[in-house]
Image 1: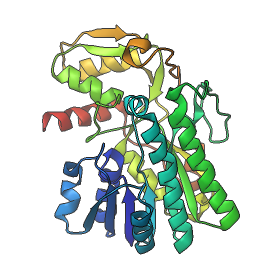
Image 2: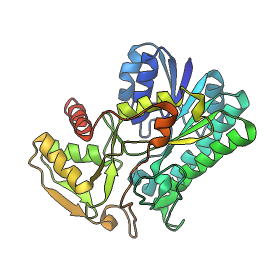
Image 3: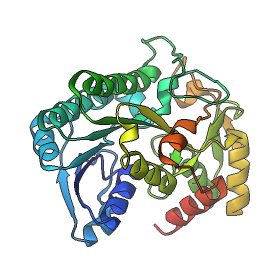
Length: 320
């Protein structure tokens, strides 16, 4: 097939491009390179099966042309990272909402199937034992810009679902939980590469808050496999599925594990949310995915553990 990946020079998108090409597809990547990097696409470009277009999903004309020429679109382009969202909230909102509108409009115009990438951020402060796709969203004030990413992604989901329900567009929605692996940058607040980079340099590992908050981390290779399986069945059309790993760990224990695996001499230090982000910043105390739906619909389940993730991230950073 001819496949379009928006945001394909980014962390997840570039790994997806590699996999699609390995599966025999030709891939076009649309990316504005604000957070994506051309070096992420070195392997894909070497195959001769990749076409790279530098541009934005905010450019409706480019989006329409590329979606129309593709057999399938993976819409992964988004403003990502807490620091990025807080520093440029208006641009982030535009990219995450209007960009998705452009992709869905084009997909509908040409009757082309599309997958829209969302985020576990949509659950907000819901700390249920295992977050299911139909669980309620719990958010803070709309004037707290920290929640703007969550609101934008929720609107993306609603738009995609409405296009399917009202216009029959073959739309699929996935919610990424914390995805980690080679090529991910810690510059935008991503915790694992930030911790590993500090550990490799024997520098202090900074934990925001008290470190008791818990997360679950999925390897990008597992996540890409999930994407392939989600788009490989009609059972996932018109619905949303969580993609993540249900192995839960506190940020304190994560830091300790990173130090142990890398053999680092780093010390752990703490910084308040207010100092790290902004006054009044709120974090989620817990975020654990329920992945029963994706298992039932596709048979997918993650196969790589946190130790593998940390070692792969460390190797990637050491090789640079």
